View 1 (cartoon, rainbow, N blue to C red):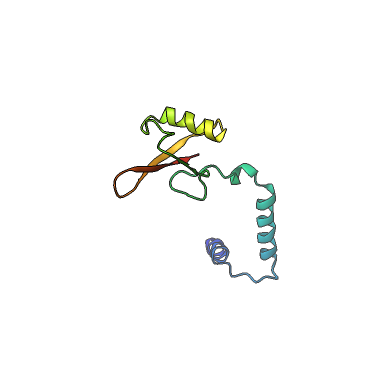
View 2: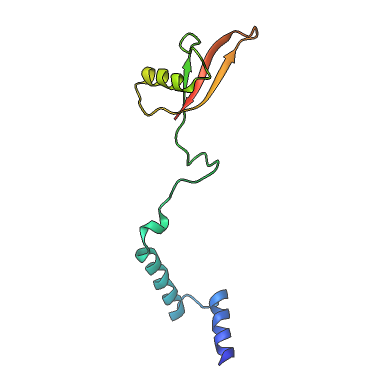
Amino acid sequence: MMNFILRIIKKSFLWTYARNTWQWDVLCVLILAFIFLSPKSWFANSKRLGPAGHQSEAVSTVILSPEVIGNETDKGQLEQKVRALTGRADIRIIEVRRKQDEAGRILRYEVDIR
């Protein structure tokens, strides 16, 4: 009896059954039952943690002149100015980059927002 059970487990695991057998039909029914009867919540895609660029929110870059920005380190003031310029209330600043020429004069600020 034990040999019989081990043989069935081995055949099932290695799948030595042909396509026109009742075992193949049972497998197909089980696969279809899994597909159609499993809850959608099992496959709901939540936000991934970590550096998954294609899963992250879109980042936009706003270019501002030095005259517009008073203090680049004050993110609160900078967010208010970017909100006023873009007309969007849901702005969050990701990064501020200063672009300078060879003489060290500030040309512009590139502000990444989300």
